[in-house]
Image 1: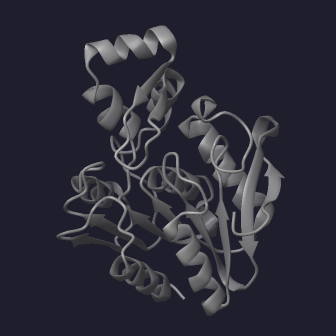
Image 2 (image 1 turned 180 degrees about the horizontal axis):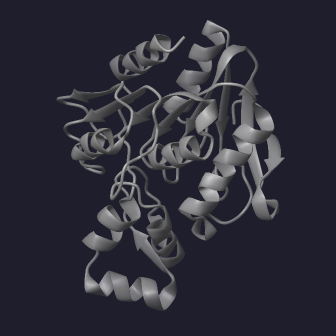
Length: 248
């Protein structure tokens, strides 16, 4: 950790680690990806950027991630969304700019929908709503599905870590309760979406599908021809900063 985390209590007494940088204007909140923590490149870049701009900023660890309590495999889209909502309710007030990366795009959208009146803008990076259905369950073989049903856990090899993803059957089942791409996404704030055309984890078509479902008319999707899933090069981060500046 770069410095000592603070904690809030989310639902069911989950202890959620976070860092808050005080400032003025809208509070920027970063929602990280699946098995990511708040020490990632984008989370720390946004903290530095917000400090330079004098903006309030929050980065945090979902339960089962980083310094927060609970086991990763006990987490679901519901619990991680609850964690994000608890963070903004307990640590911030006033307008919010929510930024979500990969799974954090799904969590971020759910958080925005839960607190619509506070949302000034949403920025998504390789957004991955509905991934538990479309990128996991629908892609899994019958053997993997049987393993999940029998053992409750499947160890899915990761392209980003030596440690496999611990996919739980509870995560898959709960994801069905939070599907977004089968109906309008009732957000009317400005939205900026970034995606790499060489993303091997979340197809770039996801950003276009999200844009189509959003009720907001102020939606811009930007693609990077040679961009991968992470979109964390210096140029990628600068584009993220410029998107944030647009809303100040």
